Image 1: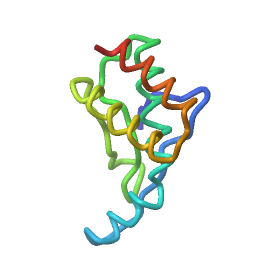
Image 2: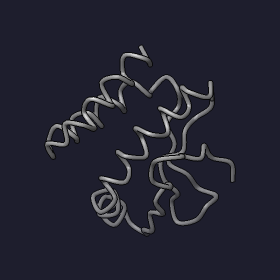
Image 3: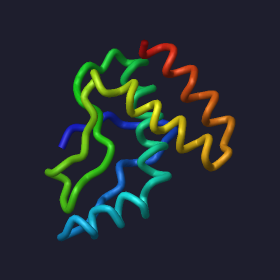
Image 4: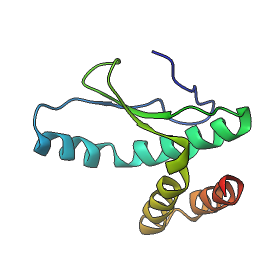
Length: 104
């Protein structure tokens, strides 16, 4: 499986689920890792001119992925910014904001 390696972030988490309810529980369980991954995967993609979808998480195996296409990066960064505001991690907010300016 090809995915953008992240030099200073989390590897994509493995979400294991069988039902929609379990999927939502996994998303909640790995919320922080997913937002960290979103931030650093988009940052790395911008820095390396990577144009494909970025991998956010694996779903049940390494062949099924949760990914974000380039045209959705800004929207996902907005969600990530809101997450870091909610947990009051203002250093990460600053990083996300700077990256949002790059992506626009």
